[in-house]
Image 1 (cartoon, rainbow, N blue to C red):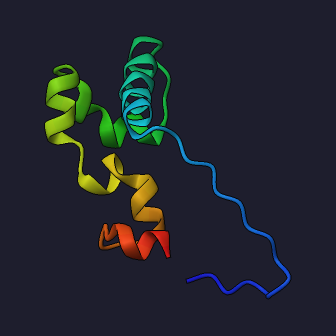
Image 2 (tube, rainbow, N blue to C red; image 1 turned 90 degrees about the horizontal axis):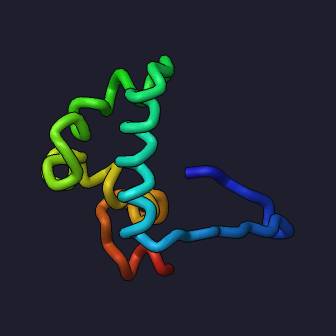
Length: 82
């Protein structure tokens, strides 16, 4: 919903979705192991606490597919590409 002027350059850096979701899981586990306090840990740790397979079942689609969601909130690939 951000309005940018016509002369603004925009860049998007996308990661492999599998690497990204694995990284999200690892981040939550690393924060838990190191006892770091972070709002993501408090809000998301329950998704990861029982392992990666459970994490994939528990993580909301908005988080699991965040790169797609950034470009279309309905997860429509055609709209996101547009």
